[in-house]
Image (cartoon, one colour):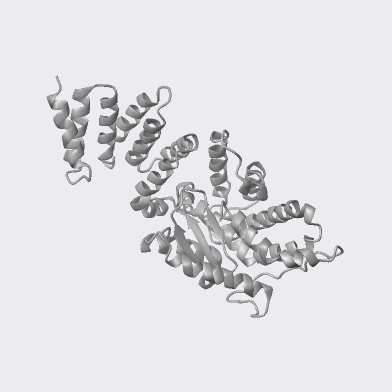
Length: 379
């Protein structure tokens, strides 16, 4: 899984296995190898795997009515299409759901339900990078890693004192295996293999910028970013590229993300992880699309953080945003707020007035008009 609810799933599995843990024989051996899932295959109804699938089915029913579900048919169909391209003959068994969360998040249930977080969509630069993440999750599904983890937990539960470490080590092996299979699926689908490590390079930079926050226990069950990046680079160097340029899908990705970009960036800024968000916005600005939106939200990061010379940086970012036609009208409102804070009344009045010109039906129109009237009345 990628930044998923690992702890919740693990806790649920552990509670379900407590009786087995207490009665397990100390000489229990390793679980038998599990065969890859075949297209359209479902587990036998009386098997342990069927129980895991039933849990996934119940979660999927709840997800369909969840308020976190992004109900955008075009975006949904687009990401489902990428998953199908990577999954090949397993396409009909994979169901993708886009959920609203600012985190780098993707997860795969054993029944074929895949969750893709909106925060992930902000952190991949093109279709190929997203395809690798989806391929990684499909790798978990095809290799039946949920069942393997379940069986491994049973086999190792006799040594309860070492349970946590053994589960983590097994999960890291799952992640490495899913990376390898996801990479193979990426290449088979015709995507550029050189894109596979690049999303991880960006994520590593974000994590480094956020080094003052407590470490996320999720990453304890995954290979380190450095290991993952090196492995994926080695994979890419070992592939002979076809004569035709492999697919990155940058233009298609930007076109489908554009309509919801503002909402995703708003969620990101509201998380108030300013250092990592600044790094993320820097990456997106380097990519060179939707610069009016991106410079505005960079300005919002500086304005809300308000440390050192952040307000000056915010003004510069807003001014850059206004060089582009797609800059949100709220850019002018935020400029007005900073000018007001600096007691530059003429500049504040001008920015607020221009905001209302561009957003005549603004929800805060009356408040802004009142502020303009007060500025006009001031000496």
